[in-house]
Image 1: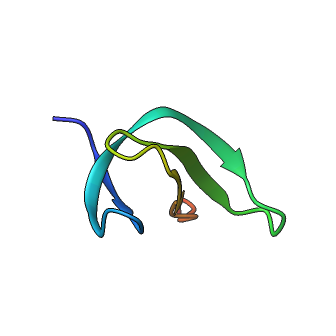
Image 2: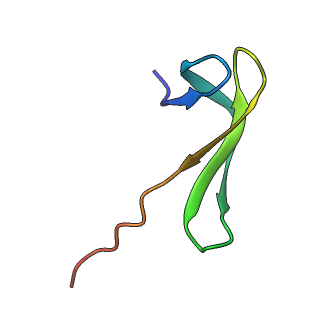
Length: 53
């Protein structure tokens, strides 16, 4: 089962299609794609955890 992300329009978690990793203006990674049900653009902010030395 693929990961699911919250769609604001559907108000539920849905799978993304055409998902791609992007970097926001502040340098944090995000995932951008289309909701598989309604087609709305979904942006999910990803973790920036760095490995500790």
